Figure 1 (cartoon, rainbow, N blue to C red):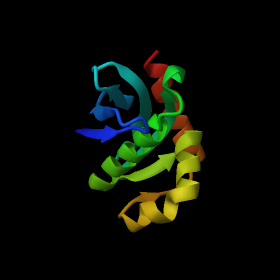
Figure 2: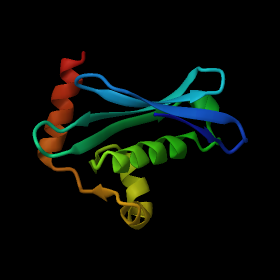
Figure 3: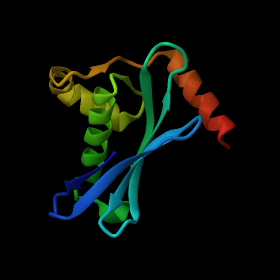
Length: 130
């Protein structure tokens, strides 16, 4: 996935999935190919197809361009395409889904509130990645 999108300034950006174990990321790239932000997640193990988003950041120098929203929306759209339940541990994802959850659901998205086991999984993944 490297869909070309447009930010608030009219500049082209792309969001690509970089899969890794245990932490994967959606990376937001500027037209020149440089990275401007990322949304990190872990996929739940086992039969449940759940994606736990736990950290999102966009470089401050790019503030006001709507890049965080582009990143969140692209990650959520990809989760819908892959029939994944979203678990928003990251405050940015949680806030977006509080505001736009009905729209996300109408587009086929599913999300649920984080549980202690989700936090434990994130902690284990971030510690093993250190």
